[in-house]
Amino acid sequence: MKIKVDFSGGAELLFGNQKHHEVDLPVKDKPWLLGDLLFWLKDNLLQDRPELFLQDNSVRPGILVLVNEIDWELMDTINYEIQLNDSILFISTLHGG
Amino acid sequence: MSESDINKLLTDISNLREQLKEKENNLVKLMSNGCENGSNKYCANLNPEDITRYSRQMLVPEVGIDGQEAINNAKVLVVGAGGLGCPASVYLASAGIGELAIIDYDEVELSNLHRQILHNENDVNKAKVDSAFEKLQSINRRIKIVPLKLHADSTTIKELFKNNTYDVVIDGSDNVATRYLLNDVCVFNKVPLVSGSALQLEGQLTVYNYQGGPCYRCLFPVPPPPETVTSCGDGGVVGPVPGVIGVLEALEAIKIIIKSPGVLSGRLLLFDGSITKFRDVKLRTRNSKCAVCGEEPTITDLIDYEQFCGAAAHDKVINIDILDSTDHINVKELSTKIGKNNCLVIDVRPSLQFQMCRLPNTHNIPLTDLKKPESLDKIRNLINEHNLGENGEVYLLCRRGNDSQRAVTEIKRNMPDVTVKFLNVKDGLHGYAMEIDKSFPVF
Image 1 (tube, chains in turn blue, purple):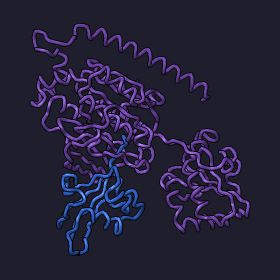
Image 2 (cartoon, chains in turn orange, blue; image 1 turned 60 degrees about the vertical axis):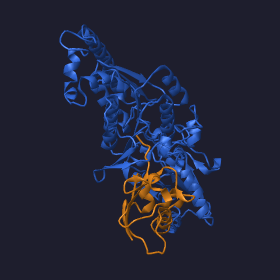
Image 3 (cartoon, one colour; image 1 turned 45 degrees about the vertical axis):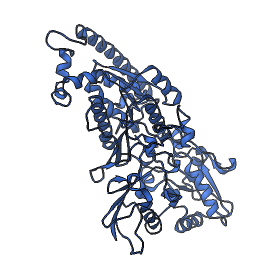
Image 4 (cartoon, one colour; image 1 turned 180 degrees about the vertical axis):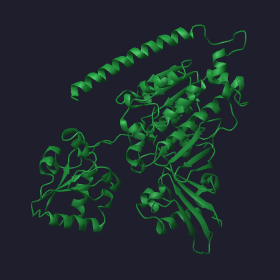
């Protein structure tokens, strides 16, 4: 299943300093949940320091997750069922000024 | 030209500036006589100068007379006179915000000038709020500007809010602790918070605590781990990026004041300057279980935000001391050895910083690479090339003497078999610039 995964705000540093990724998720019996994607990204795309991306079963504090530009809190977070061509964005919040 | 000539000129110029400032102030006083607020025979509520001055924004139907009056009566607090606060306050002052308070504890540095547009070369070492005050007052002498040279912490902010009612607060701060502090005080006082941030080529902007929208804690109940937070001093920032975000912060503040329906609340604007792209994403609603703005808040007064975040409420580096006292060499000792055949200095800064400036005859292996086998091989080779022998010494160097301590620990852990001694160069290149050669650039 093809989806788009983007990282910004510095989260891309954990993923080979690449902001945009065209991802093809392998076929599986059950639907792909956003929670599954987190671990798939950790195992397949993450290059460095998983603790800076994940904490327990979710993203670490300070990272916002957006599904098609909508906060995942409005989309049932890790339980959201990923659809073909979805765009998932991970934003690390900035604090400089 | 000798140093005393330079100093005499600097003093002369400074005195002349003071004289000029005094004369300008007198002139303004004389010219502003008879130019008070309020009605006159030609226009209601606004004086003729204001009509002219603000005409271009008043002509916009969304602003109009009512909007301009609201702006003239508004009181705004800008936190930080830096990369965000400077552009934000320029537009707020020139728009005619009645009272503009600016809080910042810091002094102007040369490395601020590329983005902190209110400050110039003559302001270096001056309080940022004093520098900002002068420029803003010269843009608009019809408004009240309040420079507050204070560190924004629970005590100072509480006091400020006890004595003032702000219509909007602009967050132009540079650290997580201050962001939580401003959020909480704005929730307690029911003030909208315009929050901007910038780093490298990216910026973010939203409005918290506005008409039932989410607050900062609704989005981020738990602060980020301190090691994931990058400051402008480490990561860098391209000037126009905080410029864009700061200007938009001013726009949101004006929109809040004139009651525009389009305020950026419940949405987050992402600006990626590397591809010149704005993205506007939809945020969650207010969290009824939020610790500060929820229905049963557990936080009802300001707390210790540095403790809560595990990080200081500024973006300066805090020096560490993790080695034994025998694991150091000072910059004076280093300067007598450097360049000699058997002197091996490894500079552990990121390679970009090494390219910007470095001491001669030093080798760059960034701290982040010290885990890699090829880096350890490189160190072994360097030790051999320098004929260090069993009791030789390797000196580890960085910007301030902190990462080099981490490097000593890391190398000792990764190379237990090597008998040479790894020593930290105390105070790093900053120390070298201070004590040995002032011409080495400090940043």
